[in-house]
Image 1 (cartoon, one colour):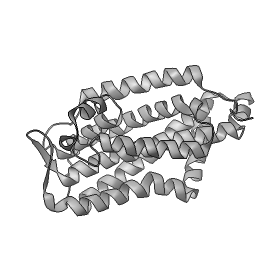
Image 2 (cartoon, rainbow, N blue to C red):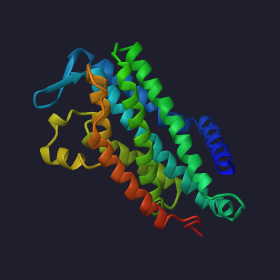
Image 3 (spheres, rainbow, N blue to C red):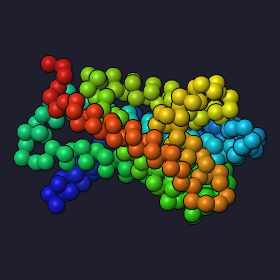
Length: 259
């Protein structure tokens, strides 16, 4: 119970700090929502977008699904990296570990906070896509969207924790995170349909975390039947998450890297 209470307190603290920071709100919420509005408005007249040979989907399903996945990665990956590195370099993690509290409650609070923010982002994105752009959101697909959101948070949190050993300042993290997210977005079918990209690049992206998540979100929104679960996505993101957590467990530093 004490661990849960401390984790909840950490998550609420992170949430208050998040809402007080205009930069994090713009990066994590305003940017994905703004891109959804702009791209859906620009390409709405196209009707259907060819995403693969013989397979098309509506422009709003393509961009709502892809940009939701992009927002999950951008917010979680960058947010965890910047928050953890900032706390480490300020000496907070060192003091936290020395305090008579479970050290894992800090990381659990980070994960819970990102789950809350990510679910909020998904609700906003789906609401705009449904009310403004007439996306038909099936009730049967909601469980898959929820599952993909949790899976994305798990995976991107783990990857962020694994590479904090290489990030020496919060400023470095705030540059690396968006750069990685935007780069992967162009190769993972978020901004451009995979049909327009080289086959070798598509093949590589299939084994990176963002492409399976984006493709699954898009398929859920475009499908007219079924629950929308794609088990390849669970395998790829699950492997990335588990391996990254193992790496983080072995390499995570509680002490500041810069003396």
